[in-house]
Length: 292
Image 1 (cartoon, rainbow, N blue to C red):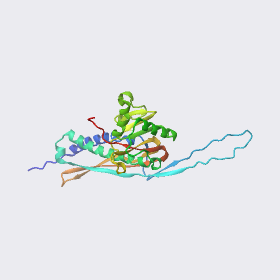
Image 2 (tube, rainbow, N blue to C red):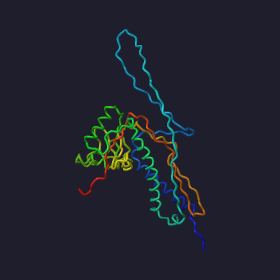
Image 3 (tube, rainbow, N blue to C red):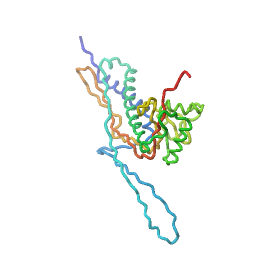
Image 4 (cartoon, rainbow, N blue to C red):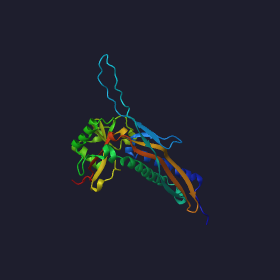
């Protein structure tokens, strides 16, 4: 019986469909990544040294009296590095021979979801350390409109640089919107300045110049308390994603397996830049009742 194998053209077509879908899905599956600073490492660079300076104080002057006090720049630095992340998918000859584009789109979506979710969770993991590790809210507390307004007041009182955003789980964000008795998308369209194609599905509402986004990648049971979740309120300048290598692919033929391995990798790091520009938000994210 003759053995039928996938041709090079078939494999390239399959790979193109998978990667195109994976890239698209990844870009649209990581809201937190889109809300923080982005930096890049150049070729040959292994780390990025980020300077930070303190505040200076101006003083009253007296005519004819020399200004003798000098202010300290107060510069500190933070060294940022990256690490590799990746996954592997095996496209069998049998699958490729089927020439079913929807199958490859499904595979691409799985890959994109995996890579996007990983990067998004890496940013979410930084939330708990903001504000010196002291979150706003408290265990089992509901994020009411009063509580979210208190979090915004905290941010403004501590001079978080604009833009400031809130990110929390959809169940937690529901507690805000249900008390307002509005349809957020209709009453509060996404403000200017955001990548609407990437963030419109996660945006809910703007309260006192602070935009609220929902992210289902925030885990429940934070601190081993059933239903608790750790979101955050933060300036864009509080955290960053440092990229050295974006979404890249390699293909390797495995003849004995009668398949082709498709390897996807990225090289990045997620970092807290300024602890004082954000705070975790510890609130209940118990599943919302649908039969009340």
